[in-house]
Image (cartoon, rainbow, N blue to C red; front, top):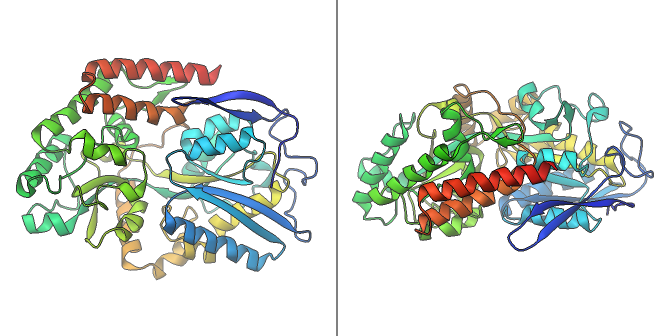
Length: 442
């Protein structure tokens, strides 16, 4: 288990009822003195035990463990302990373990916390290993750059994915309402289609749930309008933008296109087992394309992928998750070697498939894709088709971003349950986001 030495403690995240703190490194994100020098080789002789933590469902846990077992098979001196859970509350746990001086050696993160964790020196800079232990030549530079903060590499993309809308073909096709594979030309057309589905089903199931709290969909919609989530360390959107977003979803609910808020709320935390296509409460759901495999495991219905509504300029090839090395780990070099194994080894790639997303390395992807089953080949084809039309990759999110999804969920539920008007909720949301970003940067 990796431990902290003497560290100062700084506030990182404010939750609804408590403040979680991270211990920050005293000097430059370096590892403990007992570790190899930055850029040095992994430990190959002495016993090493690393802890790995990630979020995801049982399918992800199974394949991740298989890859770790394969690494141990090839390097018997290295063994692993693991912790995994659903996305909801995941970062609270990571932050708590960091504050308690026992963070995992390898930490799965997404781009929402990358800048924070780099600035807090929780995760190690990796450039010293690039070209040696860490082989990243096969990763598209645009994708690899998503793991950089101010030009320094801190995180390696485990996979790439893009936004999608999953449609329950078993429900929709008999109604004569299966959309074309190109999806919907606009959000208005999308709402009209959904209202027709609901009229045909009587709301059992609904066409889709109220997803006004879904950050990926909100970001996509903003990018279609020529905006990003952030403008440096400030919101990239206005109160008017958010008001229009909430009003669009209010219109969907009123027309019967979207479910009531009470149907949506259990799924708003991101627990895939509560996804409303799996629970068969809706005939569609926003999702990242790689999640099709896990959603499909939860239902006996046939599912298909559609692009999100409107121009695909809102899309981008995004890192589904990163692996990062805990800066104060006892064996950072070995942790980096394990991370490299996940992204560069074809055997590991064959085990991982596309559950986290498409393999980031082109060499690995080209090697293993001929053996993909039909579902994985379908995901690959969809992803390549959408990303070919996608807009540019956005910059690394602002520090403090990890709290913005929570704020959007609260604001959207306030509107959905009638506690606030779209305009009032939007004004409060933008003010809260602005304050959160200012606090995070202070």
